[in-house]
Image 1: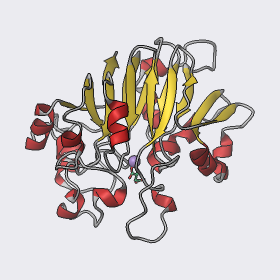
Image 2: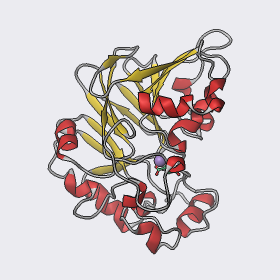
Image 3: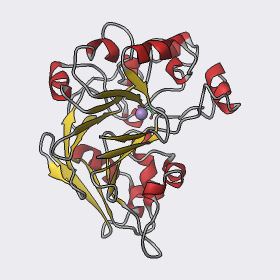
Image 4: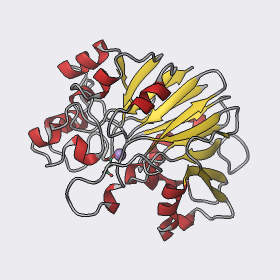
Amino acid sequence: MYAIVLGAAAGGGFPQWNSNAPGCNRARSGDPAAPARTQASLAVSGNGKDWYLLNASPDLREQLNATPELHPKTGLRSTPIRGVILTGGDVDAIAGLLTLREREPFTIHATARILGILDANPVFEVLARDCVERRPLTLGTPVELAGGLTLELFAVPGKVPLYMEQGSGMQPLVADETTVAAMLTDGTRRLFYIPGCAAMTDDLLARIEGADVLLFDGTLWADDEMVRAGVGAKTGQRMGHMSMSGPQGAIATLAGATIGQRCFIHINNTNPVLLADSPERAQAEQAGWTICHDGMRITL
Ligand code: MLT
Ligand code: MN
């Protein structure tokens, strides 16, 4: 089974277009310790020929151009991309679908809730329905994909997409079809893609136990990081993202789990782990975590 990190950053990317913060300016200036990252997406394949995208980020066109495995291989028009699997409805997960217009057949796999969001937005009709199938998946029910992979979605704590929030306060956390984890297996190895997760639960811990590869929500280092950096009022909890550090964070709550390779993805532009020379990067790596970068390849 093969995986390629197409993008490792959270919504907005790194650098984010309107950020004049030191980290983003280091990325803009080409500092080798602060390499730019596009918005989170992963490509997976069971056979190296048939590929699936985990989310379609607004940077998808650039990501595809940078990834030879995903270039057309036959005829004048074709793609090795068999489908797109959606783990949520945020802009950074769905906007790249618009890049995939041009009447090329593939399948969108998502929960009925997320497909409902696409159905309600007529702009997605550019993916003609006689060409691009929208296949609803039931949580906890595995489905077979091309190339020998099986996919299962399950709920993780999260909130509605940013543009569907009601009011400006804390949004209710739900564990339903809104924010999901994707588990992919070739029958032997298991990979989990979880770019958004608001809290660790016993159910999630039990599912992840024994994973070969985990790609997990690395949005923030600390819950109040954006507030302290002076770039916004929102905490990680408010955004539906648990942080890396702290007693309730991913590093601590997953410390006892058996996982082959644990990686952070969907990393916000304010997160100091993006800087190779930061103490937080050293701390995360010392705890056994890999900080994903664009183009990173994993064979499992
Ligand atoms: C998130 O992960 O919180 C969203 O991508 C936010 C956004 O759409 O900017
Ligand atoms: Mn996001």
